[in-house]
Length: 421
Image 1 (cartoon, rainbow, N blue to C red):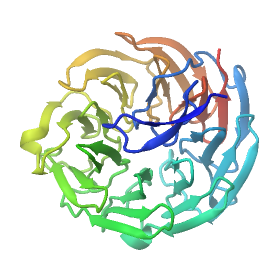
Image 2: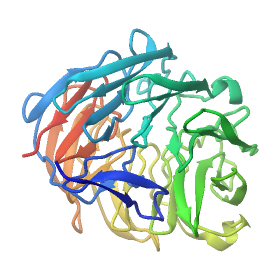
Image 3: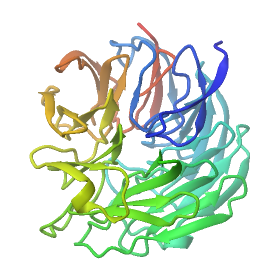
Image 4: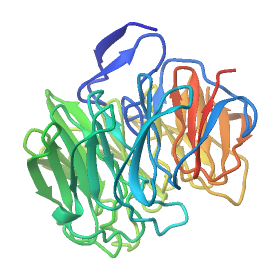
């Protein structure tokens, strides 16, 4: 096994040190990977498999769910209902369950592609942090024992989202931060990772059209100009807050100038170099914002806007300062983060099913899971070239996870580990 080391992941993308294995990308500690980019620079990953061929193993999960698994070393962590309760499982790479911990009663999903455990867990290598639609935020050790738990609905009120909870918790150097943006009281709250005590809480009381106050996005933790900041998107605004105390730093708006209703924020923002890329307007628009500034930075830091492309549900992937937009119907556009210009565009095969899973880039290839469970592999060197279509036999909403030259895929009912080929 490769020797462990500590390294600072790109200072403009993630804010604190993660343990990493030298030989291959062994850690995928949160929903969009070590740098919140949905991509990895290391490894060689499988290109062809199916529900029955090319798999190391398949595991039937104890309940229906759609959260993306995470990986820390030899630990695969996934959330799933356990006897109608919110649950967390720890598996090894042979497909064996080390432990499973049931928590509080599950609150099931309303949408056909939702469950009580759509949010993905996150880890710093010491604790596992898991959030659920029930409002429960639970912190476990790597033996499955609960260190502490709380309920965000006691802070922000009952879930008033039109659909289902999608945001995942994020980690800073000292805190775990949860975000609740919905039609009632909403904002961000930071808890001390060790104790669960509230370090700070900030409200986001923006007035906006119907449903636009609902946000399903996951915030970003960024180190910028020597300090940790957290960036949140929802209620037609992007806001940045200082991590140490939650203090408001800046905001950017203009994401709904005509006050159009029913434009909830679903796809999370991403950062490429020092440009924040935000897709909005039900997948019709995308904008680039330079980090920094104070107060309202809309006129000074909003660099570009595209009005003919975007993504509604899938969060973009970032690779080599390029942003890859996957639209709900399979169109893919590669844009330059600094200018917003299209570098190339293509499309996956047309089908009645949509894309809810966010794309992943690994080994120079793009992996995209369609709602019906077909996972596409495509080369993205200057153009889109589909390499394979891999049917998995069940609905897929979670994002593909590339680790140690293998691919983790989470379906509605099963977890798959695809071997290298």
